[in-house]
Length: 148
Ligand code: DQA
Image (cartoon, rainbow, N blue to C red; front, side):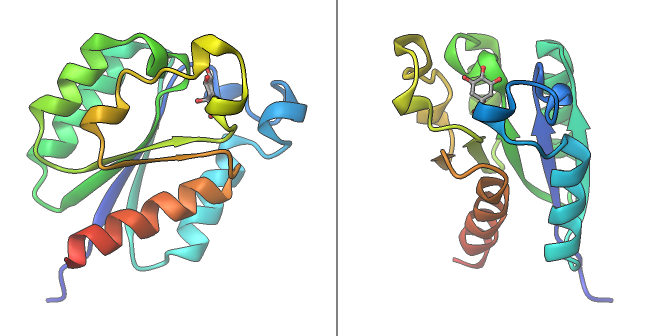
């Protein structure tokens, strides 16, 4: 049997409101649109899509992915938790599977408080400012990392 790669796509607080939330900053596509486009563009990947407003749920999802052998890595948009969640940073550090940090907006071109990410150092890399396409780039990055 050919082994299928599985990837967790994890979205944090307020990303459930995409489409309605500040469309000038985050675009008009909903999270469901973004997730569907990932599934369409990468038909061979088994995606698990999780969104939560709660820090602990995101941490639990990371640990579950870590414990599932078929799960190869995570694409994470942690929302505002990016800027202050040491708990999320510690969770990423506690697992061995790669996490790619994604932001729809360019966090370095916005308010000062968004320019600092406490998770970047423990992620494989960061993709910021490319909107929905950033999620696709993040999957490509994970796949390329897997094949190394
Ligand atoms: C975001 C950027 C964060 O600063 C913000 O709190 C979000 C979304 C982005 O995708 O651009 O909720 O992660």
